[in-house]
Image (cartoon, rainbow, N blue to C red):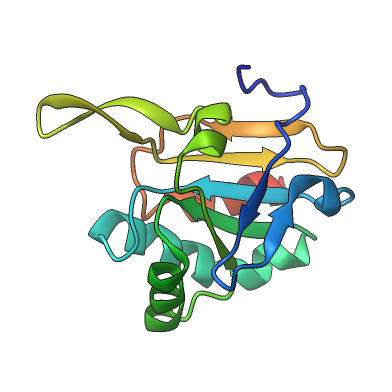
Length: 154
């Protein structure tokens, strides 16, 4: 299933950093920002995560909720949240099944080599459960959260 703007977003249920289950169907009526990132505590991912933290209050004012998604476990997510004072929940997709549904896992080129991995991307799911916007491959992690906020407030 391809992620298409205007179409229903794939349903998911993932554990957060505390082990609580977060299900998309329970978020109906809210705009949901899902940003997929490769790894906690890495330079690009830290810049992106901190950018979402810096813009968090403004994003929340739009009524949207933010979730970061990676393959890292709860312990890693807890430390990452604490170290950088991240105000939103981090979700674990250890087997990358949800990432595959959201086209956030696949072939990528790193240091000139093609390999499988997490593709930095973001999906904005509207209040009706449909995809409003899909940023398929985020080129500049540090600038991206501001672009998401601008889209939300446009």
